Length: 205
Image: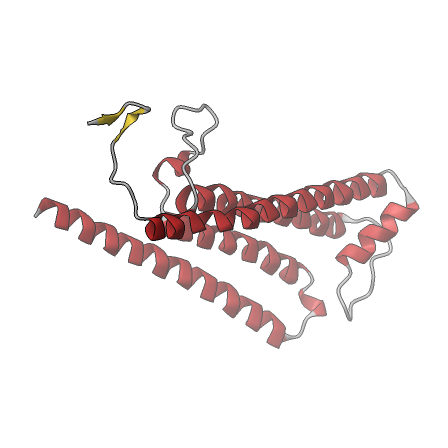
């Protein structure tokens, strides 16, 4: 039987006051997601500041050049004296890093809200993310792990570009950490696959 007030949804049993109160506690997560949206705004502002300085440095602005050199400087290494290909590459990698972290924030905000707080009813919306149509806690964990691997790859590439400024111990440690992220993502994806297979087999029986 359908609810006359919500013809698209069947009637559901009325929750007890305690159960209703506990279920409503999920809305306590709302300020957390709103805080992440503010963090996203900070990243957008940082991206445009860095991009403005890169363009200014390319046009010969001295203040922008100094800011760029300080941004890409590595402790213990000589600070660049001119805008070269390596410096530009490091700045662009920094911008890509910001974009990837922003993508990670979007996945956490949208996917987390949809999974743990409330449905957003985006079915049929032209801008609905493809992954959101089948998102759950396991899918979200796998996508977050993949995004973290991408961010780690950018940081590792930036380290390798300035490899002469780092000790072998630091290079090995960062490589091992990146491999650990990669193995963790593989383990999460494999576990999710096992759970999905078990769930599908239980449905058949």
